[in-house]
Image (cartoon, rainbow, N blue to C red):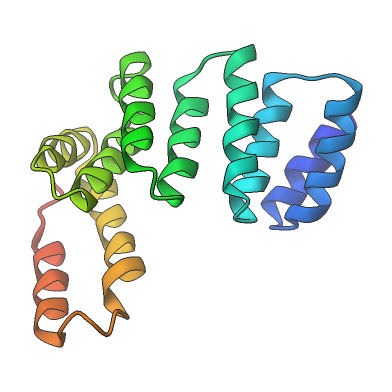
Length: 169
């Protein structure tokens, strides 16, 4: 299946629209969980979150994996459908209990909901891979806080220091 290799290559090159056209053509010929998963990734990358959710659901109907369920949760998280996203991350964790990203994303969702369960998931992610969890926290800080004009410089500096102090060994 040379076309799927080309689609994956285009995704790696961040040429999502072209990859999407190839994947749509392949799906019309013969559906597969992998094609629907890749279509979901393309939709996620192009911020077509409802289309991403639908594609991941189709992949899950064909083959239920923790990855596909987690990615559906990521799309729901992007839409701030936080309770639905948490259900997806929990379902992914039932299938793959050592899924660092599902733990981290669930922690983020609970944090947005101001729910103390956030720390339980963050601790689980940290226990699985402290270094990667610290990297994810830094990325999260940059994405949500560093340029936010509503957060004071003192709070931003404090958050950055706290993240930097996290031990990873």
